[in-house]
Length: 135
Image (cartoon, rainbow, N blue to C red; front, side, top):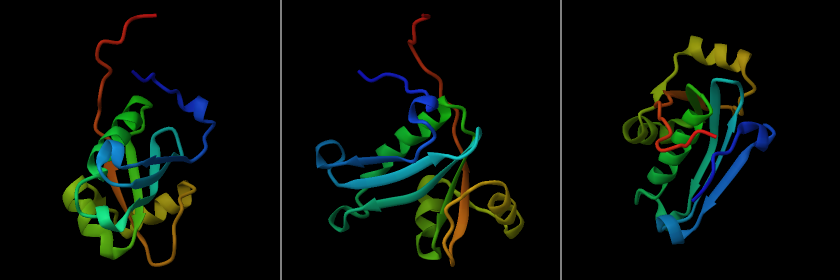
């Protein structure tokens, strides 16, 4: 059984999670980072070509959402190209930011933004710890 990890233990660094076929059946790599108290960014998700479109990322994304909720992140932002937009809006519930919202985020937060990308956002669902004993 795992334990709850405080963000201070991660020292504000970018986190890389790689999961092999043992757990999810495919190979998925994810980089995510908490950039402010209430905002996290998901700048990179990569799935091996043989595993694409088979749903291997969905359980990992659910775990990421829970982790972000436990450390009180309220918004998850995702810079991406237009080709990938429908996957994130249809399968994972992200919404496209308006130009005004994108400009505000670019000015307020140190996001990893590449030329030709737009930004999607999603409210992180609230989860609660169940069965946690008082210490």
